Length: 436
Ligand code: AMP
Image (cartoon, rainbow, N blue to C red; front, side, top):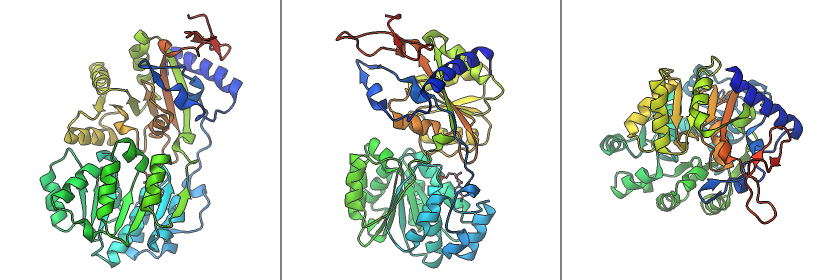
């Protein structure tokens, strides 16, 4: 890491971290991030500065069950072992048995907890003994849906389990063929799944098990009507497995209407960000790009995900980095799906080591070895921040998150009835009027 950068980041870290101790993070974040006059006001840097906690290995967590205790079929157990899973994660420990008993499940858990296998394993096991079962899995983004399919696939060698992907932005004809061939599991985004229902390709009447993954994100993306329309067509009795990283009023409304006496598991506190050393990089607006290049050229920054606010910025920044000889590419909502898939694959397989992205990549993506997340622009709210930085520090690894803060973003709280413009002082850890 270049001296200049470390000097800025570490001095700041010392002042902020030592004087304030551990920050709870969530406090006032959304207030501080309310955009007024198109401006993100009163940024509290404390929220982006936090030491990483000790990484607890899955083997060190306390669980009641071993995979052998769930009564899985032999081939599935072999596949779990072949994948290298030694014991269940806490969420798997707590819900696999309940899913196998047919109970509804409410999992308050983010990615990184092992929730995909928590629903995938009992579903696969059921299909081995009852191949006529039909399951729908709804996910917010195409990337997450694809990742869920890959996770299922990794457990099905030697087993006859047929899966179709139903996501927007990809050829619908191939998806129709896959579904008509008798896919037992359909994994997709709500819009495309609803569309396939309207075309009578999916007959919802045949399904009686549904997984709703990352419900909070689906609602943020405006999918509430699609979710309700799909669920209205899936007959009772049915089993619903419902996962959300957070619960707000909107999510609560769905929980009440869709779940029947669910088994509840909350792993909210085990956010992946506990494994992430968080810090800020202060700089003048014009120096931002140069500072980023210096960071990226450091030998410690091996694989990095950079978040930018707009599609245009993301595209422009990735082109600049590429033109500077770096192995960079981008994903955002304006890129065709096949290109997004290709770029993501290249990043996963280390053909490129820098991915610039909008928040389309903030949630769900499981790429094990991202060493750094850089917030080139500040996220709009604390949940987005936590999701972004959760892309590093995955599994047993430690991660680093750096948030760029431009000097113009330091605005003092209004003083004595007048709007004030101040500077955040690194020495005092508070606001000064100097910069007015
Ligand atoms: P998820 O929360 O489903 O996105 O999973 C996060 C990561 O944990 C993925 O890379 C999984 O492959 C991994 N994982 C899930 N369950 C286990 C387990 N029981 N043992 C080891 N790794 C696991």
